[in-house]
Image (cartoon, rainbow, N blue to C red; front, top):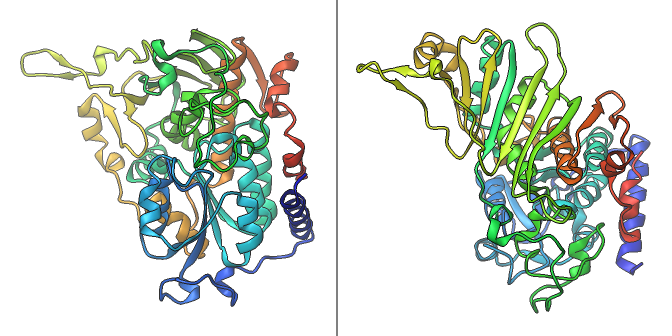
Length: 475
């Protein structure tokens, strides 16, 4: 174990123990320790960001977090400041921000100057970065999906309560007029008796192209000179030989490092229905179709059926059918189409991704796209009759500024770990079904699979490498 690792482990355990005894952490903006080059805003009106991941998705996340002028980056951490995708924008906007390769070093050296941390790195490292920052009393914004495993999400939900920090997962649509509208529609009873949900996503990522498919881990290639440490990139996971299919972007395809299409886009497609219909955890997960199935990368096409239990009056058991790839679009019944002057029936375009909600009454369906898209009732004449409940309100904040304002105590986040953690666990369960390709029964109370030891092992997965094991010890 390196000196950095030992120091990081001591700090993590010390801070975790402090939180357990009820100690509180003094935010950096209330201390005298400030990084140089901050805006002229007084300390009580600004948040100092430590950014773990500067390129890729962070090219949009960091500008979003800083867009209202109440947050500023004071530390950048990335393993490849030259080769990461789209990294130039953030480096040019904030050229004087101190740079690190190891987030543990960043937090050890600059923790006193950091109020909040953004975690925008490959899925398999989300957990270790987030829990380290939380143990130091830092608010955390973590890109979706929240974690790589079911157990990691469980720990982060407990950590949110233990460390009493502000949290947000990066499913941007959850702070949007579309989210506020859906919540409003639920309150008005428009989603009552939904018993079936179709969810779909057209193919887009490289592993959903048949000509690019692989069924074995790729061979070793020379590590780019700009890349600081492949060992650090692998984090708690086993170290496979470097290949350009992993970095800078293709890692999402691999079971060992990513979460596939369901883990990626599921956060933007089923998030509204999962949260506002209070679906919770499923009782059964059944792979219906997994094209070119293997245990190295996610399927070419994936159709999975989830069964969610009844939640009370007006909330019957729900079947959610997820389809990504070929034949993903659901059948839209003509009776929900709009009658035209020539007596023809016009059906809506389904688009690249979305959900279609079916009610037991069969009087109308509710369709939504993805991210922050608004919902629409079909037939249209029914939507017009219920327009007061369907009209989308305007949100006060964007997803990024919602997090920053919550860090300042002015609001609460819309996708805290208490919400996004359980959504991520649903995604994790789907990923396990994609890996095993067997029907699974699940007990939401015990949070264990019924009669399948291999599936239960995958809830946490293989033991993390020794250097990272202490992050998984939170009680």
